[in-house]
Length: 265
Image (cartoon, rainbow, N blue to C red):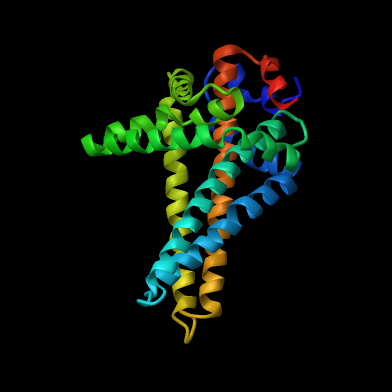
C-alpha cells in the first residue's frame, strides 16, 4: 500500500493519533497543493466572494425599485454558493484521499467524482443540521456528541457511497472508542480558529474603518479576504476529516482499501 499514513504511529499504538492527523495537512499540500488550492479557489473562495458582496449589498439597504430584483439575485447566489460548497467539499475529500494514499490528485477527476454525490450530500447536510440543532436544543452536550459521532460521515458518503443514512451509521461505528480524541482535535481547531478569526476580524475592521472603505473597493477587498480565508479553512478541514477517516477505518478494518479503487476508475 502506498498510503504514507500507513507508516504512522497510530497503527502500532492501536489508537487514533491526533499528531498523524495534523501532519496530514502539510503532507497533502506538499504532494498535491496545486490541485487542492485550485479546487478551493475556483469552487470555494470565488463563490464565497460573490456571496459576501451580495450580503454587503443587502446590509447596505435595498431601494423599493430594485428590492425584489436584488432579493431574487441573492436567492440565486445562495443556491449557487450552496451547490459550490457541496461540490468543493466532496472534491477536496476525494483529492485528499488520493493524496494521502500516495497517489496524484487530479482536478478534473476530483470534480467529476464529486458531482455524482452533490445531491446525497445535500440530503445529508439537511439531516445533519436538524440533528445537531436538535441536540443543542436539548442541551449542549448531546449536540457535541452528535458532531463527534458523525465527524467522518462525509468521507463515508463520498468515498464509500454509503448513502445518506448509511453514512451516519458508518461514522458512528468508526468513531466508537475514539471520540474523546476526536473531540480534543475539534476543540484545538476551534480555539485556533477563534484566535485566528479574531485577529483577522480586527484587521478587517481597522481597514473598513478607513475613509470610504465601507463602500467601493473596501467591500471588494473584505469580500475577497473572507472568501479566501473561509475557503482555506474548509480545505484544511476536509483534509483533516479525510485523514481521520483513513485512520479510523484502518484501525477498525486494517489497511486493505482495494475495494474503493473501482470508485475512482
